Image (cartoon, rainbow, N blue to C red; front, top):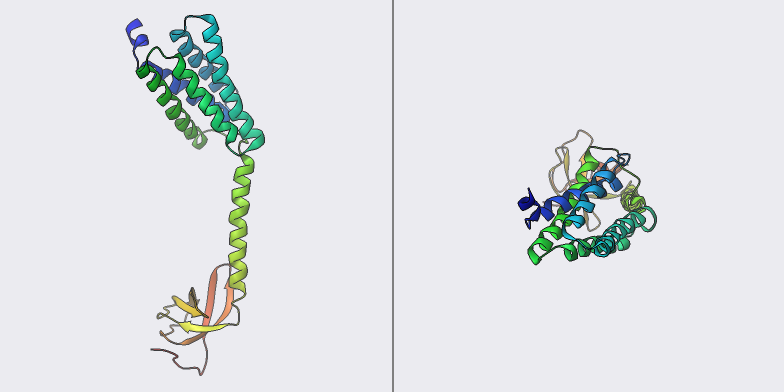
Length: 218
């Protein structure tokens, strides 16, 4: 048992699991269960490698300040700056506490892998309201882009163009110098036929053949 605990790779397992549970508690609501597991594992890691109480306390403080910065970023700032600094603090603390370079490297990898694995909890458990401003901004940006696209398509109603492909009933039309995907109302329209936009439903463009126009192109 002592041999396993002293192995360089054990830091990867302990730190990886500890970080996964701690960050998992930040991302999902586990009523403190993940937090207790994570704290226990991280304290065990530092206790296993640091024999001086002062060094143990300092490294624990650096690590948990990193966790605190991540929480503040997720709840308040929502820009990732403090989260990045927090992750750097966590990595620094586990690396400095390791007895040698390879043990430190394993532990650093443990922080990164554990952090990545913690996002898997989002697929299983109820998530907390973290980084909501970033997600809201992304959603509003997407909605704004979709709305802008709808407005552009709505302006096509009544305009005439050319069928660039055979429409059976879906095909490509050109209005002005721009191509669009159009659909005819249960009509087969040959390539080169002049068409007119009769209706727009979201990004769905309905067209009909312009009567008496004939073919405009071969």
